[in-house]
Length: 142
Length: 142
Image 1 (cartoon, each protein chain N blue to C red):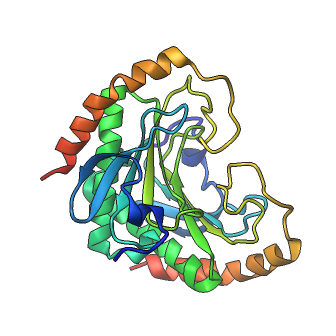
Image 2 (image 1 turned 180 degrees about the vertical axis):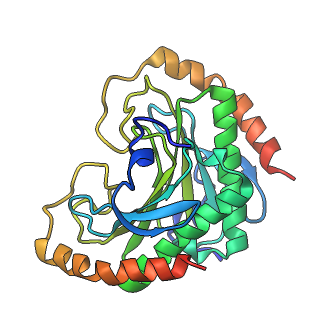
């Protein structure tokens, strides 16, 4: 059920980390946040409550799996989860590892920055992401 | 298991709409967003993945119920869901009715405003919230 002109129907939406029939995980690598992942529901639905209870559980199990990998592999200070979709109304969950030294902490990543980015610390996180991606795929796959 | 100095252990955290043993729903009424609700897990845990799978399902069923009421009662343009907790690391889900005329749309509520608030439209939404609150309690209660 692809919707024309929906960027999440027309492409993976980032570096593909895992995919099954129902959902996929991509690494978005937004500027300043190397460990910025998205769990994207493959079917085009706008809202979380468009999913059945069983689908919601499948979706949130994947979100929790990504979260747990970010916690254990990166010792993130906090994990931020969000399903907004105001611009791209195709259900996707942002799963973002936050660090107390990152450019926006403790503000949300969408708010004004609190300080300059720390290139060295960001590079250290980015260097871990290949392992993170492998572990995410292992955790979600049956 | 109350944690001292945690505002969500020490108080409801807003206008109490519903409460059971595991969770509560409050209306936060942040400035410019009268239909800004939070589903707060009563027990002090920081991260969504600190919950068991069964608890996660209970939590997200409540989030989905609030979402569905906001959709049906307010004809919201979009629902925004987020669990951030960078400032208050006690698991709480923001459930926010968004409208294409609101001060920040399509940006997240935490970003810079896009336009001035529309006091008349906000008052119209606010006037519906008593019904919304009653319906939320009905939907979540067994």
